[in-house]
Length: 51
Image 1: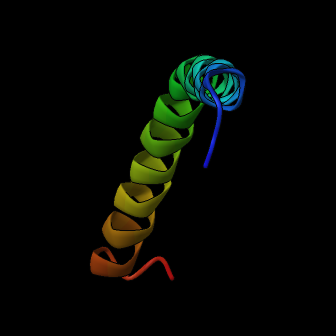
Image 2 (image 1 turned 180 degrees about the vertical axis):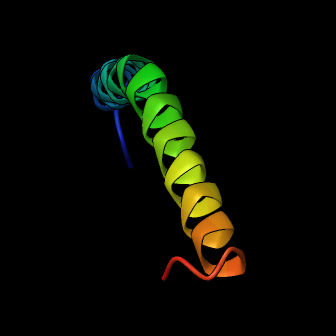
């Protein structure tokens, strides 16, 4: 059976992972925006016969 210390360690680990995910969120949003712009640009180029 897990002890209180085991659960406390798990809680600390989960908080650390959550913090790292929060820190990555702005970078992921930037990457998503860049990807969307590139896709839009690619689609426009294809429609205009530039590809």
